[in-house]
Image (cartoon, rainbow, N blue to C red; front, side):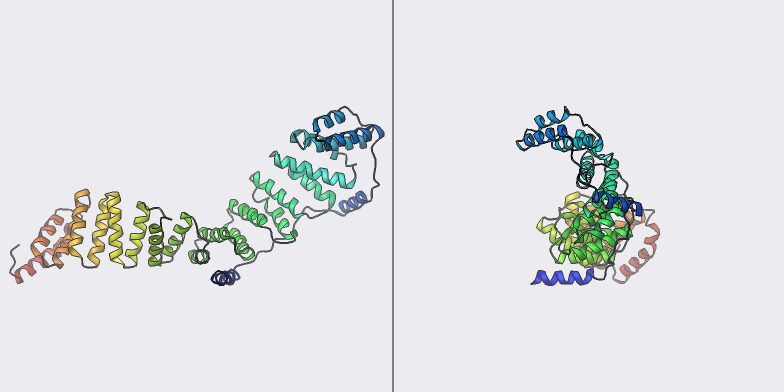
Length: 421
């Protein structure tokens, strides 16, 4: 029940997205083209000459016995008596070669289809087969030519053929040209097809048309709401538009439905909480999956969880994670940040230890760290130690001016308390 209700919520959210309808566009058919189509359909069935017919029958029997080479040998020795016989023979040879040698199959099928004298069914099937073989052989320009010839020959709007044309353009790096045929595949499909939308998404993304990419994925999550990867795509693509609020919403839906699985996906969820100024959620997501092992514990992630806890004013947790970071990296800045977190919760002794560890590893920021130590000592009432740290900070040009007001203040406090500095 929980899964169903979460999915229902997802659909409600998705309903606010823009639903894209592909524009009407296809291979243009003129009146003359349509007239030729009807003429071809009405064309009387033509039979090959006796010699060709007999050879094809023998070859077909051998083919049924899985003797393709023997079948080809018979056919390759025959010569057609007229143009139709030659085309009919070439088609049969091409079909046999399609089972073993795509390049030879293409050669003969092109010969068969060129004069356009085969029967309607044979010409249609041969045009599609040669295009399929050319696509398999990465002859994408030729494949597009023959797929489009098939459309003009039949007048049919076959979504699978449009998909193949779009894919051929995609393989050629012609991403914008892929969009019209893929829109046609979407339009003429009897029901929504994931392949169509994936290819459209890819073509738009590669064209750097990010707004339309997002619109397409919004449609995808409406049509296929249980396809977990589409929600991840949506969340990621919103970041390309710097729409971090919508990105977070998409990732939240995905997370609530258990769709976030990989380390990178869980990290992105945390990052979106951080980008939307929700550091506590970012930190707790990171912490949960660091502990479970789904997110690798490394320098970057320890720093992320610590800094987000600090931003959320969870200073004790921030100090603990900065401590882990310091132990892992031995970096002076990690100890300094730990010290600052301890200062925020008035754990001055712990802060001083962290500052001393930072100083022992790097003196380039000494003045700033000595000033922090001075404050830690001062708030404990340890005026002599505060003054010692102050004098050390005074020797650093970066903090020398900052020490002036503190120096007189410490001296006055010491005079009142009768403490010798």
